[in-house]
Image (cartoon, rainbow, N blue to C red; front, side, top):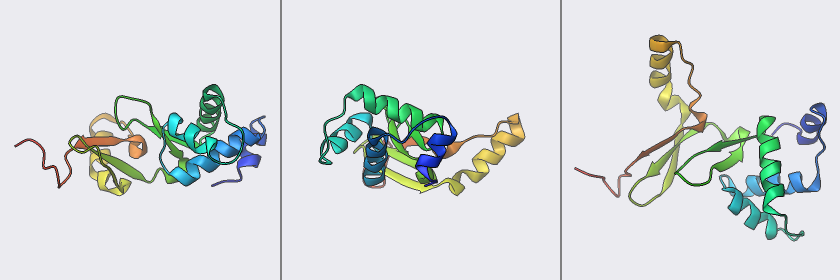
Length: 139
């Protein structure tokens, strides 16, 4: 990840201990809802952080492009470090397992959207819902 403190300073912000703890939690978790970040931060040996602090930290980091989010379901968004946005999420509607595939697999789809509509899709925030090989899905 880019030098976090430098990016924040360049945008008139500081690397507070709370923001550092949120980033560290995301680095450990990979993908996490705000509640999961709160639980991870709560277990890192520091003082518990209010949910509002975690949400504000995630929002500020996302505005700067350091953190991104994906909606894996209709509940809370799942956050991850921006450098981790090199894949598409596959969410099983049967067992709820989440898998990942490289963004390159969507290349033809993205090219088709651009050719047909002039729309340049960012599939790094994409979650595709379906059924995993184990669940099989409806016939």
